[in-house]
Image 1 (cartoon, rainbow, N blue to C red):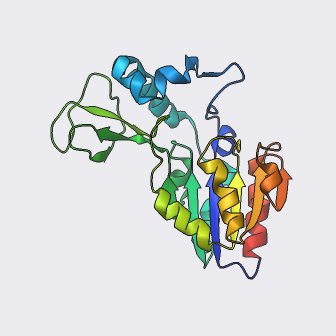
Image 2: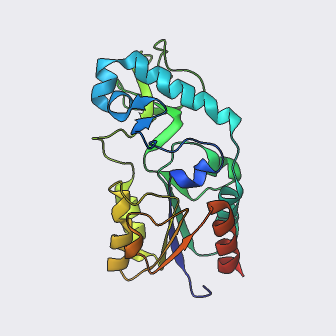
Length: 232
């Protein structure tokens, strides 16, 4: 641990589930009562924008009822106190990492509290509802959508992520299924560039076999303990 100079951390739905944020997909294949194809694709938005906007408005409003947990706070402490290079890449669209205090952070799948204008292409911070076709703060067009990366769209800042994976000493995956690409392939990229790899997940993921070490249990227990190891 004392020799670590650069760390890349991937977080997924499992880290926010301990705060009460619903995970991406339930056992019955539905996402908060909806088929993913009906609320998380560009085609769904074109077919029924009202349904999609209402779905994400409800998820955005629900953020007020959750708070960062011990794992979020531990990663924020690592961000604050680790002197080397650090990048936290989250698949989550909630704002719990930011509210915990993390700054060296990027949202590869977008953010609930941002809106993307289909007319001018600009992204804006957004806390209210998008149903009702509000105007874009930039260009004034009524063509805002959730700034969320849907199925069939390219995740954000992939070049930056790939560059970080190519130069890190340690790649850590926290609370991910290991089944959704391209994030599921990050461990292989890190290993190719000779980084050490660590999984922390409630249970073995689909990609556990790729990791040098796997620790299984609640993120709120595992992550603070690991951060103390790094910083000690």
